[in-house]
Structure formats: structure tokens, C-alpha cells
Amino acid sequence: MWFQIDVGLAESVREAADACAIPQSEFSPDVRQADPNFGDFQANGILPYAKSHGLNPRQIAEQIVSNLRTGEKFLGKIDISIAGPGFINFKLSNAFLIEWLNAYKSEKNCRLALAKNFRGKRIVVDYSSPNTAKQMHVGHLRSMNIGNSICKILKFCGADVIGDNHIGDWGTMFGILIMAIKKEGADASSLTLEEIESLYQLGNAMIIGDESAIATARNELVKLQSGDWENLQIWQRINEVSRAAFEEIYEEMGIYFDYALGESSYRDEVGRIYEELVAKGIAVESEGALCVFHGECERFGEQPFIVRKSDGASNYATTDLATVLHRTEQLRADEIIYITDGRQRDHFQQLFLTVQKWYAAFERKCPEMRHVWFGTILGDDGKAIKTRAGTPVRLKELIGEAKARALAIVNEKSTNLSDGEKQHVARVLAIDSIKYSDLLPSRTNDYAFSWDKMLSFDGNTAAYMLYAIARIKSVLKKCSIDAAAALANDLETAEERSLVRKLTYFPIVLAQAAKELRPHYICTYLFELAVEYSSFYNANRILAEEANVAARRLTIAVRTLQTMEIGMHLLGLETLEKM
Ligand code: ARG
Image 1 (cartoon, rainbow, N blue to C red):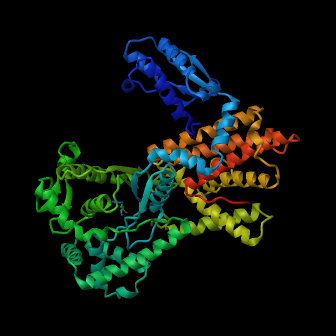
Image 2: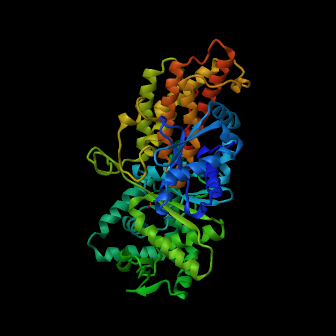
Image 3: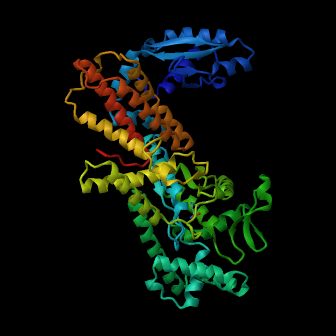
């Protein structure tokens, strides 16, 4: 039995087409979810094929369908018909649906069925990656949440995933910061992150219009990069303090990395980058800097990818190139996925072009590289969200406020819980809501931040999903029926069928989320599933008089719960036993 019914059907259609002498290379079955009025799945690929070959699509559809009918054993449990000019409709029989439910009882079954999709593929996901010397703010949310979810999705689909937090600990800001610390006579060994942050602001103010301050800052950076002891001490302290503060946030958010190799980990590799790029003529000197021009892209003809600045310092591009080397040579990555906001699209396009040319020149296997970018979180004014004072909203404060608001809601709604339980529920509700509201909008869109929407129990929210899950759990706790014999009997009601049908779509949604690296498909699906479950629950008594009916409904409920929990896990969310 196929877990991904669309993939199984496509395979069968392809075989049937093959038997009609339709060349595989020219025909794609294009199997999708169908409008429930017509069926459960639909193959749409015949029309474009027939059109491009000047053939009658209806005739081709008839040939394919007659071949399909003699096909695999479970195709007998699917009603196949031709619609319109040449679509093939598939309607799954209740017997088929039950067989499917039985075949994928556990999370493990589902996981194993999907595992072939990415089997053996090693993927490095570069996410979160904040810069040190600054507190994390709301602008850091999306990379963290999207990256965390993408890691989980790819792992679930069988990939060998390495999550790497590429912390920005080697940038230009250190020149400015070290200058400010020295000018202010601050004692680096006792600075807090807040103090470091204000010294950085001070440094930034110092260099405005002051050539000599600019030169000093630049010189401090060059000194740091060439191993000056004093500057290295200051730098180290700043990074320690920053990383400790980041850890607190990750702990609160439940985000864990396999590696947190900062940019600085690659500082000794930059020499090799310059040498190799120059040796193959990929990088050239231009106005004192070492640059890569990608003239084939109009935009980059004028705007080079600078890999060494004119003062000799390495930069973001250099360490990114060295990181690719480390990831392919040491981590053996087949693919690297970078998660940052949309403003870095040019950087990554130039990075990828450079790596392609560089790896080709040395006959190395080039990894697949993808930039998964996202839009901005907006405030009431439609601009990037800020505090009233015009500063970025700190994550520490945002999490604190979410927890306080969640606790107020829980105190009001969940009067039956103990104080300890209320604290737990409020924490999960707060963190899940932050994550869910961040993952729900398509990542390439901007979205408006709203406390009320985020913590609401109505609509597609974390609270709604948590509540739906807790409710199924509480029903299940009351049942002592043995669900083992459950599925011997057929589905009866329209709601049962509709819910099981929805369950069969989960793998499609997951595959799509994994392909496009867009977790929001899962959010949309989970909400629809919860609504579908609600109709089922309202119209069909789970604890029906007849034992076999009760057992069947119970099994459907268990399976719905399992799917919801997998979905929530893939989004990086915790679930609750009760609320
Ligand atoms: N530290 C960078 C920033 O805050 C993001 C790093 C993304 N990853 C990378 N390999 N460039 O903008």
C-alpha cells in the first residue's frame, strides 16, 4: 500500500502510459488532490501531452484507463473514470481507505514510508545565525523558526540533516566596537551584553563623518584578524557574553543546533580561498580589493562579490566561501540551505555563482545550494516592527510578554487546572503561539505582528490547534475500547469518510513543504484537519453503542491525533495533554 497515494497513482499512470507507447520523458501524470465532487485524486497530465502532440486527449485517457484497470491489486479498490476532455478521476473506495489507515498505524510507518524521498542525502541547514555584540530581536525570529521547522521536516522525510548556527562573530562590527571600548576605557572583562550593545552604538556614532575614527576602527579590525593579543581578548569576551545570551533565548524557544560554528571558525581558511580563486582567474584585483565579477548577470557586472577588502581584511563573503569548503569537505554535505531574510538575496546568488565556478575549476562536486529567504515582520505602521522608542523589539521581552499574556488567558479560561499546570500551559501556549504565527504566513511574504491574533482561540492559531489536540486526548482517555479489531468494518458516515480522505492528503502536504521548504503548508493543513475532525466529532458519536462502530471511530480519532502531533512536531511545537 502506498503512503503517498498521489505518488503511487502517478507511478501507475506512468506505467499504463508506457504500455500505450507514450514516452516517459514527454509525459508527466500530474496527480493532485481532486475536488470532492469529482473524486479524491485527479491526473491532469494527459491534456498538455495530447496538445503538444496534436492528439485527442480523450482517446489517450481511455487507453491509459483501460491499462490501469488491469493494473495493481489495490487499483481494484479505486473507482477510475474519465472527466471532461481527458482528466482521470480516482475515487478511493471505503475498503481502500481502511486498508490505508491500517497500513500506516504508527508514526514510524509514516516516517519509514517517507524515508526514501531523501535517503542518504546530507543536508546542512544554516539558520538563526545572529551576529554577536547585539541582543537578539524580533528580526531574528523567522530564521530560527523556519530553520528549525525545515530541519525537522527534512529529517522526517529521511534526510541526514545537520543544523548549523553560523554565528556572525568575525564581522566589521568588531573594529568599531574595539575602538569604542578602548576610547571609553571600558573594562572588557566585565562588560554585559547591554553595555557592549551601547558601546557599539557609541562607536557607530563616532565614525559618522570622522575619517580618522573610520581608519582607527578599520585598523582595529585588521589587528584582530592578524591575531593581535589584546584585541583577541576583547573579541573573545564579547562572543562569550553574546553566546550565553543567545543560549537563554534558544532554551526558552526550544531550539537546538548540531553545530554553532561561527564565522570566526573559518578565519584560518581564508588564505586558501584567495589562492584558489586567484589561481583559476575567478577572482581579480579591482581598486585594491579582490573581487569576483559575474558579468553574465547584468546586475553583478557592476556590483562585484568582494572576497578581500582593499585594507586586506576578509569579510562575510570570504568566511562564507570557507564555510562551503568545510561543509563539503568535512561534513560531506550534498546540499546547503541558508535561511536569512530577503535582503541577502544578492549575496547568496553571488556566493552560489562563485562556488559553482570555483568547484568546477577544481573538479570538485558542487553541493546543491538554496537560499530560503523570508519577508519582514511589520508593526502597526506597516514598517518593520519597532518599540515605541524606535528600537528593535528584543526577543527576551517579546517572550516575556507572550508568557504574561498567555498566563492571563489561561487563568481566565482554564479554571480547572492547578497553578503548576497553568504555568506549564501558559509557557507552551506562549512559545507555540510565537512560533505558529511566525510560520503560518508564506515565508516570502511580510506579515503584520498582532498579539490578539497570535493568542486567539479562533481561527488558524496555535491555541486552536493545542485545544483541538487536548480535546481529542481527553476523549481518548475516557475510552477503554480495544481499537485493534476496529477496522474490520467499513466507513459509514460522510464525516468519517471525509476525515479519512483528509488524512490521506497529509503526505502530499508534507512532500510539498519539503520540496519548497515552506512550513506554512503544514499549518494550513493542520487547521483544515482540525475543522474536519470537529465536523466528524459533532456528527458522529465516538463512543457509539455498537462496539465495532465505536472501535472504528476511535481508530480514526487516534489517527487524526497522531497526524496532528506529527504536524505540530514538524513545526517545532510542543503539545498539551489538557488546557
Ligand atoms: N549573521 C548573518 C546576519 O545576521 C546571517 C548569516 C547567514 N548565514 C550565512 N552563512 N551567511 O545577517
